[in-house]
Length: 494
Image (cartoon, rainbow, N blue to C red; front, side, top):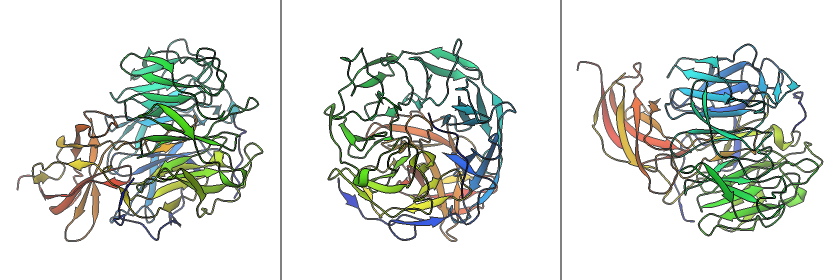
């Protein structure tokens, strides 16, 4: 639980990433958000959806659109629609569904600033390219009395798995107002844990209670098997990563080394899961007593993990940004954003952008962009196959086949309170003559698996307002671009 906050002020292929300034530096989105925002979601037409939070009207969403050259730094804001009038949550579940148009939001630790662990939820329908999002109420699973700040994950089969913060229960979303009960976790409850999708198609949860079903351990973990809908005991972490008084936990990120770095909550420690070996090893001790009693982390294209941390006492600053390097199991300070040192880690949100930059926001009107050191880990980029090189602007349901279209990680993490996974393909077209960038709208993927070398396809619609001409077309997932295919975009009837 967090206090309601009042806003104050591994081989590398070295390629430059579009839209970056200098390595390991920060730039700022020039146009402030219309009001303070927190959670960020990557829409499948290249735009970013941001939720107003804490101060102001938390019913409201906004959309950041990149400029004509794909720059988010020079992007512009528009309306992202409003939640139903009775729903104004803080610390809630979010996801973009595989149909490309549905955004799901469930629960909330607070509603209109009151601690209620609400079961309210809402579904948004996106109008691609220039439109807003239309939001309607969505009923909770039958019999649930809480969802609160619970975690979720979109499974490899595209189904959305929702936790109940305050019980063992989970449920699969079937569609508007419809859910099916899934397996209960083995711990006392889901609260304060997170779900991490793995490359073996299972889901990891690190428990934050003594688990009597897993040897009574204080270091227990669990795996969810989507094929059976059941949970089983996993290996124990190397150290207890939470304390009894608060039961907070940090982010867990699946790296390109097929390891998961789990940051301790109000504990100055980390632990690292070797997924293939099914074994935890000691992670690096964060410098200067840093902890992450809730907080964000995101995977950089170069393989490092950017994390926002802060020291005890609970939910206090000053914050510090660090980078975890799986190649040598190290955790070192990096340059801070302007939001540090004043903010604690729990107010931070991180999300990878298609440019390879990482957006950072702390319930503020200012979005800062982290520019990682350049480079992309070998073998992790998506690969697309040659398709028809003649496309018609405004055309729908074009099909693009490829390998690793969903990337190899959900990329972004934040304990239990927020989810902003970006493991789905975006189609980007760059005009050969002008360099201007246009995003298609992707939807209805064949799979959501992040297993290595997964073959699949996505459908995409072209913006009816884009010009004709020759374009370099590529898929970008988790900020990493595929190979390029040269295509001709024609006007209808030509």
